[in-house]
Length: 206
Image (tube, rainbow, N blue to C red; front, side, top):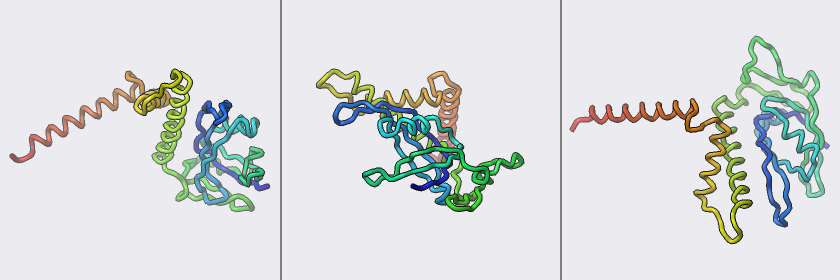
C-alpha cells in the first residue's frame, strides 16, 4: 500500500456507459496534481462497479481540495484507490489570507509529500482550458450514449449528429446559450473584428 497527497483540478460528471456484454455502469474521471511528484498532473477513471464507496467519494471532490490517498495494487497490477482522507495539518496547503493565490501556495517537504512551488502550478488559463477539455470529452461521451439509446436498431448517427448534440451539452454546462451574456459578448467581439478588418481593407493601397 502507498499513501500520497493530491490537489484536485477537476472531476467530470458521472456518465452512463455500456460494457461489451451489455452491462450498464457509471464512470467519472478525475484530474489532479500528485504533490509527492512535484505537482505532476495525472488523470484517472473510476467505475461504480469497481469500488462504489471510492466512486461516490471521487464524484464529490471539488477543484482545489487537497486529499490524502491510500492505494493498493489490484490482481492485474494496477494501482487502485482504497481510501480518501483529509491530510494532516502539516500536510495541508498554506492558508495565509494575505496571499492565497495558487502561485504562492506551498507544501512542506516530508515523507510522502512533495513541495510544490509556484513554477509547478498551472495558470488560470491553463486550468480553464483543461476543464473545457474535460467537459468536452464528457459531452461527447454523453452524446454517443444518447444516440445509442435512441437510435432504432440497424441505424447509426453521423459524426455531425454526435458533435451537434455534444456542442449543445457543452454550451449548457458553460451557460453559452443563444441569449446568454457570453453569446452576446462573443457576437459583439466578432462584429468588432469584422469592422476592423473592413477598415484595414480600406487602408490597403490599390
